[in-house]
Image 1 (cartoon, rainbow, N blue to C red):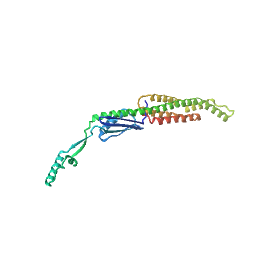
Image 2: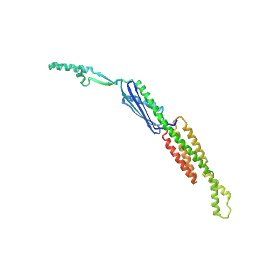
Image 3: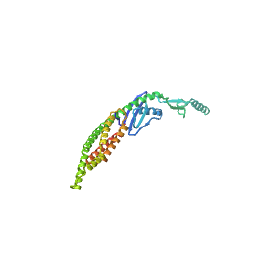
Image 4: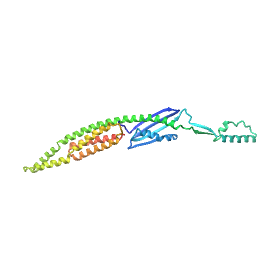
Length: 293
């Protein structure tokens, strides 16, 4: 399955009184790169989430976002500083007695307003339970993320496959044009010698030697055979169920190298035009595979 390196996935669920949402998005990168945005209280989950994502993603710059909203579960604990409250009560009673004040205002609501008598702290977190809830949601988000990458990947695979067919057709035309190239060169050379030498005899042996040298210098059989082989390998790799981007990148360089060699060897106008088309198709493939995992 061909996967794009660009993707987006989102999932959410209400578990144990927490509204948990996970989002994943990615762009192209040479290797796997991971970054995250988590609540400070969930920092301990980051390494686990990275491993969860890395198990399914081999290339791409991936950003994970986690949000947790407490809905029904108590997330804070209110505690009383009894020692401080007792101190304030004793002081207020002493002040009321000395100043002959009615002490009917000394109630719990008064003491609750005194700084530091009541304190709020985060409720203890069951880390294992929280991780299981976050993991369940994160796995759904990753599945949605991979599904989107697969849709984009299939589109790129179809485009690349079509261009491979075009490349094969162009290579076939190059082979056809190349087949009569040596004979055409020999005929042109013979005609040129006749023009220069007039009625004098032309050395047939020398003519054959020149034609052989020309054929050796401009032979492109090896290059066209390798191009056909590379296209076949390309199709085999596209059918693999694994990350293939780097393999395709290497093969694309090989396709380009062979087409450059053909272009440098052949000065024939028709073949040169075909090579230009060939290189254009290879470049379009190269642009596509930069997005493949």
